[in-house]
Amino acid sequence: MADDALYPIAVLVEELKNDDVQIRLNSIKRLSTIALALGQDRTRTELIPFLHEALDDEDEVLLAISTELSKFVPLVGGPDFAYSILPPLEKLAMVEESVVHDKAVEALCKIGAACSTAHKKEYVLPLIQRLSTDIGWASRVSACGLYIILYGKLEATSQSTVKTLFEKLCVDDMPMVRRAAATHLGALTQSVSADLVKTDMIPMFVKLINDEQDNVRPLAVRAAVEVAQKLSKEDTTALLVPPLHAASKDRSWRVRFVVADQFDPLQVAMGGELSRAELSPMLVRLLRDQEKEVRMAAVEQLPKVCKDLAKIDRATMYTTNFLPYMSELAQDSSQYVRIKVAEVLVTLAPVIGSEKSLELIVPLYVKLLRDDIADVRMSVIPSLGTLNDVVGTDTIREQIIPEIVTLSQDPQWRVRLAVSEQMPGLAKALGQGAFDTHLTQVVLTWLEDAVYAIRNSTSSCINELIKVFGEGWTKKALKPLMQSMANSDEYLKRLTSLFLCKRCAESLDKDHVNSVVVPLVLKLCKDGVPNVRFNATQVLQSLEGKVDKTGLNKVVPMLKEMTSDSDVDVQFYATAALKVYE
Image (cartoon, rainbow, N blue to C red; front, side, top):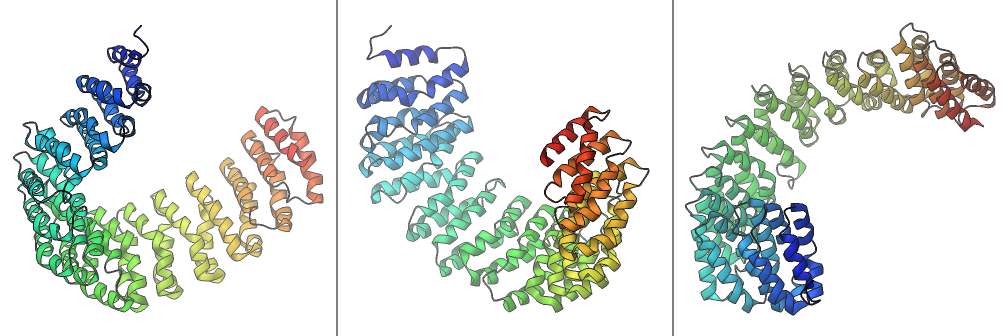
């Protein structure tokens, strides 16, 4: 065994030689403990150099070393000695495995930020220079993420060096290096003054947004958001808008997609006036793009257009610029575009008002309800409540309800499910009279649906309808059906009647529970199918606290009798139910 002073490193050396990766990982995760045992001086002079020499291992181990070293500033003596941690991280930043060099860059940024300005110039700048000019592409990719430590924080001579190095990375021969430069340009922009953005960042941005590779240009478009945040309105108009217009017409759909996808962040960064004048025309162009992915991204942005405008001005913008193309999009050849239209269409109705919604939104809504693709029909249904709030119940009753009745029998069960989930909202909007006339029978029919999810959703729906219409509706509309189902020869109908009893009891008062629910459940306690009987006991258990004295005189003896049932499951659930009544 080594002496006490050398023992931590001796153990580390032995463990890092072990063939088992997990043992080596566990050893690395104890680096902070080892550093504490060694003290600050020996951590700087012995542990860090040892790690620098030991960086020949599995990527998983190297990733763990980067993670641990990012915590080492206090362990080497604080910011005054943070530079001592840089050498092993520099070596890790040269590793080609992206997760390793990305984690090394993250650690280098943290440690570099802790260094004094003098140490940044003495240690960090040379490190970035070495990585930026290294022959390995991974080094140069890593370097792109490190300029945020120095840019705008050194004196003029050193700042000129930093600028030149980053400019070279923006036109590097390797596309992945230029991608890294574009990826980090936005964060770099945020770390410098507005003057440096104009003089330094904009030329780099222009080079990257005009790059020959279509996997570089989209990243430059994303960086435009941060660039716009630092520029005045005049500078944005002159320097940023022309490249963005060009990007919205780019030959690559990926670039056009990002322009559409970043519409909202861009309009926030550029301000309302520029958004209306410059970004909105771009979005109109993208709504008519030849690629469905671009059209989908553009449609998704419609509810966010010009959120800062007064409602009347925003309505004018929608009706003038965007809604003329919605009819075309609602018939798009791509079902995925139509799904996006179905999701956002009604969100425009509150903005443009009742009159324009009747003219422009309702016909498209009906068209989407009739779409051949089930996912389109299903996507438009959830917005029914919002449409009702805008156009009123008369329009819904006359133009939409007939379509809803048709959809209630849709061959796709997910469509029927989506319709069933909208019924409580429709009930509130239409009132009991209109709902009973058009939709009550639709809801009750779903209780006999072949799909369990529909029957279960309908039970929840009916529970909500009781809250809307009151217990009187239960006796009038629901009780006859429940009794019919409980007397049915079909096992599933009898079982469904129990599920319905359990769910509806949540909203019914004590009188209705005892007059409607309890007699029906007691009848099914004697059912010939054990599955029905033990579900009946579970319903009785859930009714505890709602059963009156007369009901108790029937429920308790029934449960006692069922504890001796021929089926063991019925015995078990009956015993459990009986305990809540004793």
